[in-house]
Length: 299
Image: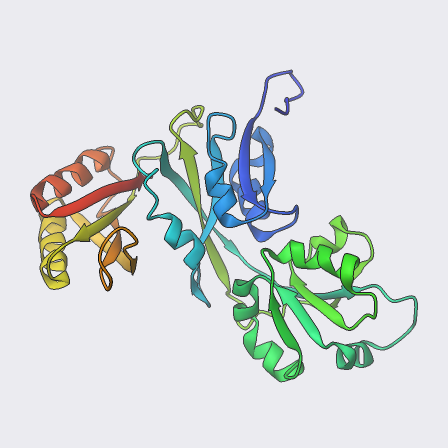
């Protein structure tokens, strides 16, 4: 475990690596120098790493342009929730994507280099967030998914021997990995492109600095009956508990029969409330039997 300058051990944070991913930057924006960072090969591995040894994790959950991060959403179905893992915070970060290539020992103009690119590597979210730019400028290039954006940048240095490949990654990757250069900056389809990240804590996580009263809660619901009855019950219970529904997502229920789903409902209080945890518990009690509800986090 890493130590701070005064010799005190730092807690670890798992994130989708390698160094330089947007998730790495988001985690650093949230925790700063108070922790050490533990890169993982996938989002799922970041979740699996949560333990008393690595008490925190940062996972991307949604992008304003490309929608939900399905891998993270599916992890919300895990049986670990409410037992030893819960959401303790979130951070929203503006996302800039750059098209990078291996630096060439020539004076070729960027236009000529762009015409030679046959393959673009990146995480599926980055490819989706830059799809319009890619269609306009690289319509014939193959788009290959990689586990992470910075992993795509590293892959360029390892595999692109003929200089026909490019990667979409954060700008910082060209500083971390020597031998890369930016061919086209800010290629995301929207300038206001943002990604939301969840901060997860293991039940043995150390105390964090005092934060304001919680304003959000996420609950996972599953029901054997009609979805209309579930939504009606949730809406009624939320109103009685002075809660407002922010969003609803759903995914297939892996532990039930085909064509049944689990629902993820995010709530907020009409004003910051130190009693939000109790109000969420009251909501679940109000629903009664027949509905399985798991509190994924209150923050």
